[in-house]
Every structure is written in C-alpha cells, then in structure tokens.
Length: 126
Image 1 (cartoon, one colour):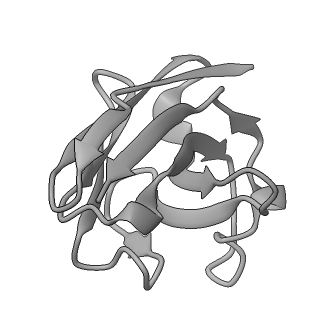
Image 2 (cartoon, one colour):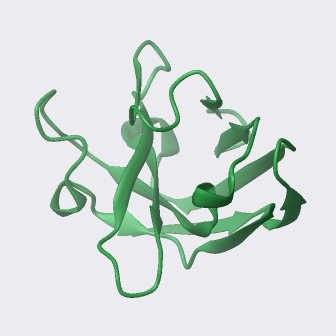
C-alpha cells in the first residue's frame, strides 16, 4: 500500500502561483511513476503532468505546458507541482497518483494508476 496526501491548494488570483505537494508513505516511493490529475465537479478526471521514477522524464498536458512544473524528491518521498501564471480555468480539485508501470502511450489514463490521494482544491479568482 502507498498512502498519498496532497497539500498546498488554496485561493490565488489569476496570474499567481501555487506549489502543490504530495507526501507518500508506505512502499518505496522511488518504485513509482508519479502524476498529477485534476477534476472539476461533473467532469472526468484530467491528466496534468507526470514524472518518471528517477525524474528522467516528465510529460505535461498541452493546457499547462510552459506554466506548470512537476518534480520529485525521492529522499523526502514527495512529488511537487509548481503552478505559475494560473488561469481561472485551472481551478479544480488536484489529485496526485502513483503508478508502478505505464507505457508511454498510457500515462494519461487514470486506470494506469494504482494509488490516489484525497485531493487538494485550487481556486483561481479572475
């Protein structure tokens, strides 16, 4: 089992920044690819970013590319999402997720992730 706990959400003005954190406990953190997803009420959970086990590879949704940065610290067992130039449409519940394995073509699919956090809310005022 892996337990994931997100933090860092809150209210920010458009154009501002937030950094989300996701602390992991349980099995070896470095054995998992990590990702961030987001979800608005009534909508499907949407891929935001992912990072490989050794941080060698990152990928982003087109909607956040150039504004968001995913990183991880395998000593602190934590994955981060630095969000800059926030827009009102970025307002969502953000979730971190852990995947033991995914193929390059499947990392955006929620079914590829084994563990999920409870989410943290990001609100962006215009």
